[in-house]
Length: 249
Length: 278
Image (cartoon, rainbow over all chains, first blue to last red; front, side):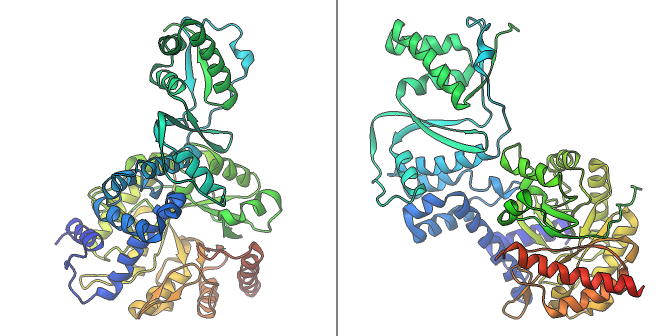
């Protein structure tokens, strides 16, 4: 057995408890196996603290074990382990989109926390912009997804240790969830359907003109243009838009 | 052959988030701090800002846990490049990792798994160290890990492996005195033979930590103060090695900073006594 085969056998012992090493060294090997599983469970607990509180220790542990068995870690950093935990939640709790969205919120907040820095944009930088060709640069910390439940309210209540946490509910009308970082603080916001559609357009190609067209098509000419201007001002102040390029390539 | 790692003989602590505020706001009496490299190999945000501000006050050693220098299928080049970028930014005192492996065939255990002390493993480890030092543009230090299994096929002792590894690659050694104690207890070898067997001129840094008694084995938990037996071993190491950068490494059950500074004062006292006697 060469070194590679030996290490693959060790991996099989860790992940599946294979009998590659027999029983002679079980006591020492058990230390490694315990370290492996404990570390991954702890990693998921740290990444999803409010989901843990929401579903309880027993359910969380069951989900964590199922996830570890189905998704052995592959990245060099534990920070990325748990990125696909939502897949496990989808399988275990298929009728609970509130839990899937709660997990997404927690993961997005963690990612935003260590995303690349982006200095805020001063409004003065916009005075001479040619808006017909302007492309918005969004913060690299921005994450977004469709919202169908009140998971953001649930997360906020749990985060603030509120006396009562709302039950998970479907939204009357779907919208969007947005996570980003301003300074060193990760932020979460729910958008209505119109604003979320506008953000998706901005995220896709950055063209302010296309953002305006999207809003005009949803709410009409006058309201759409006004909304686009208001959104741009808000996103600059919030640190979502961090640059505007108006040079034609 | 790479330029040998620098020498430095101060006393330091592992920087942990529980003590960030102490280090940022105060004047903590340490000669250097050590950080876990991977915690700062991120694109941006508060961790990198904290590291930059601490670096303005103290020399920083980068200590990694994910290089997997013993992997039979080589190193992760993307990991090395990220580490290089961090090192270029921090200008660290040392860059270190462990004589262990964690990754094979796309799987990553995130644990410091033992390397069999064989010629095949030695050749593989040395090839990997050469590559790492080449990408990083500097000599690294490698630490002796605690281990819980030994292998029938081993053809050399751990200290013979470390000595030959250092000789072939020019890397330095990070001597974890607690790990020597834990492994010696678990495998029944003589800890003093280990200390006598490693090349003294290659040791650039020392870790002191605590461990826990597990079922039939000592476990390297880093959640306890340094025990009397490890302090005794540190005295022996000081007599053999002379002044070497020494730090307390605590990773769990983190106490107030003052407690760790008290432990560090013991190490400093031992080091000073040996220096005076020399």
